[in-house]
Image 1: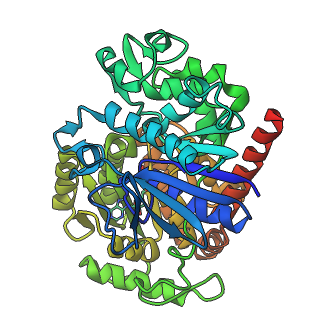
Image 2 (image 1 turned 135 degrees about the vertical axis):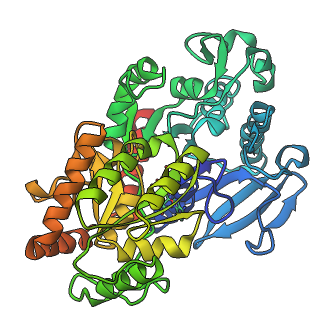
Length: 470
Ligand code: ADP
């Protein structure tokens, strides 16, 4: 049985700031179902509810629990490093000692493996926080028999975050100064942990096939495109899944009534409920457009707000927004709802319950992200039969195809307000063609983005990795 050890800085249900936590929570369970033995290492942050997750202290430097049937989770302790309010920083910025904090985690995790004689076949690392693990395997542990059969995989969840630190901190890696060079850590005179991880890991993955291609270009490469191109033979794009038991219109306690491809009355009720909750006219003939997401530049809000201004001036439509983030976007949405008080409902905050109601109750879901490594919201909206409008990028391009070609949504190819407006206009036009829209909704409800499929691809990759070793 293959033994895969995850090294990650966050995982559901213990600690989460972003999509990496969803992957590191769901993928081990899906791999276990496919017959793999999986162990997870992460830091023991003070924010983790130890009682709730039945975490017990096993040795002075780490605690332990089990998830799924028998996935062992090791939580590495260090009071000074992990007993803080945030995972990576505060609202004023990142913690200054993050290199030390995560460097310690990587070294200590590898030591715990040895101390407990846990042989791993594959060590699967995630983002810059654990990018030192593949480096340690190929440098300080290169001639150590305990580690010599272990292969490494590094997954890049979002290339925008690379773990860049001043050169003076290199000592905290515990490595000799000779490794600070252009074929490793050095990046414009600074330390770049992700860059080193890209050089030293056996295989690289990112969270969608299209993003795997895009990050090799100057437009999306954040300065690492050349390094990534040099590893392209070993770079795979594997789409994330969604938790299809949590996101399930047939069994979702947070929505008005269950529905499915065979019986859509629950969706009709969800729409009426959402319209009421937003103070809109309860009219099934008016399309409800929605957006749920972080209010950040990446999410395309700069082109979406002017597009919606134009659409709402010319068409009958209702718009629901749920999100939280940068102040400037809070103001932009505030203005929009002031201009169209009867047709725009803005909810600035994080609200899981409302998110479910919006996915179920709206007709069209807007996701004009400027770049998107994978994106979960478009998959969730499809699962709820809500038709996405997306920009052709990253994971959006891999999951949404134009309805004109027997696809499941509306895709625009130029990143600007005009192209987005045109795609929304087309979506509204199709919405008014009942038979056509109905078939689109049915097709969307058939989508399958379960983790099982992704886990199968990861297993293929692990196995290939093992073969190349032997
Ligand atoms: P990213 O990881 O870049 O933020 P994704 O589309 O991959 O974007 O995942 C976003 C997830 O967070 C989705 O499950 C979405 O429903 C959820 N989400 C985002 N903003 C909110 C919010 N304000 N309230 C509730 N859920 C939200």
